[in-house]
Amino acid sequence: MKTGSLVSFARLLERIEILRSGLRWAPQLDRTGVQKILGQVNKLREDVLLLSGVERYKERMSEKAPPRPKATKKRLQALMDRNFVFEGVFGENPKLLEALETVERAARTDLPILIEGESGTGKELLAKLIHAGSDRSEKAFVSVNCGAITSTLLESELFGHVKGAFTGSVKDRKGKFETAKNGIIFLDEIGELSAESQVKLLRVLESGEIQRVGSDEAIRVDTRVLAATNRNLYQMTADEQFREDLYYRLSVISVTLPPLRERTDEIPLLIDYFCAEASEKLNRPALRLSARLRRFLQKHPFPGNIRELRNIIYRVACLADEVGDLQDLPETIRPSSVGPKDSVEGRVPSRFTTLAEARKAATDTAEKEFLEEHLTQTHGNVTQMAKHLEMNRSYLQTLLKNHGVRAKDFKGKPKSAKGS
Ligand SMILES: Nc1ncnc2c1ncn2[C@@H]1O[C@H](COP(=O)(O)OP(=O)(O)OP(=O)(O)O)[C@@H](O)[C@H]1O
Ligand SMILES: [Mg+2]
Image 1 (tube, rainbow, N blue to C red):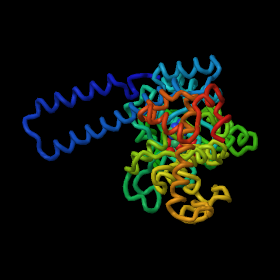
Image 2 (cartoon, rainbow, N blue to C red):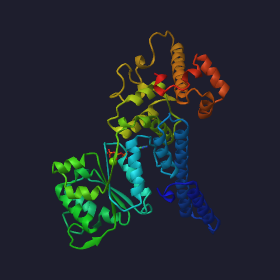
Image 3 (spheres, protein in one colour):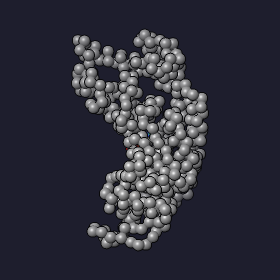
Image 4 (cartoon, protein in one colour):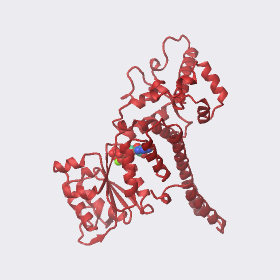
């Protein structure tokens, strides 16, 4: 992956210097000038946040990850050393690493790449990553959802049209292929393309030229094509639903993103990532999750993959106070023994006679689960835990003692041994 196209400290510093010299030599600033600088500062802020996320991710991967095979560790480390960290996180599933290593190499070429994977596995994110790592990173990335519009409209969307080409076409219009000239066009849901559109797309890929709808003029376009699908395109060619010649053109390089249920090692990383993201976006205090909610999420099958996990965390971030719990889950997946958020039986066990008593018990349970969860993660290392939680170590020891939790019980145990 080309380091220059990703956010790096050196690149940030360079941009700050450009901003500084721009300001130093500005004779005076009017409102437009101020707006422009504010825009640049905001972008810088976003990139600093992204970079700090990347740094935290690297730290977490190196410090807290459970023991993993040497070869996997080497591959993961090699990717991170080459600055292959994108807006998101990933774990160590061999299939995923293979996909990432492939796109890392292929990004720098101009070859078409086909990204396959179930819905919500991160295909669009990967396409953006390829763009960021390619020589076209400064040029456009244009995404078209081939399944979202009818075949006739899609052609005009992709290739543009001339005035009068069809009813309602009152002036010439550029298509996405032209907009993405010298950049990348991402054809999402490519499996939904009609037979007619498949022929037209094939022609464009073969000739490197497009024709706007209603025109004979050929326009050269140097646009790299990335495509994605959640269907089995190869099978579709066998069933004659997708042209074989087009399939081979699009899939010179092909990668498959495994579903989340096959990369469960990533769930804790993704949870932390989305908790931080949601807290920031929703402008709320840092969200923590109860140990039982974490356990639930670790075991959930996630038919909607990473998108589903992300949506759940955002929902929890919106509903929960400080600590998210099972009650904050959507009803469709909430365990039946747990009531909804507002239901008394879901939250407060009836064995309490006063509200204060119930409150104290609930806090105690959550606190204990929280401590156990973090002890599990740090394998019983209280110093590391105190550092991570930014808490005083001796206060932490007192809390553990109060709950009768012994750090040494968590030493060297696999994650599932405790906390369940
Ligand atoms: N590795 C990751 N780290 C963080 N966030 C991720 C990761 N992968 C996916 N996401 C997030 O999950 C959501 C779904 O990802 P994306 O839209 O790329 O999936 P998709 O495969 O294109 O889905 P669909 O097939 O439904 O179009 C997005 O919000 C994306 O940012
Ligand atoms: Mg998508």
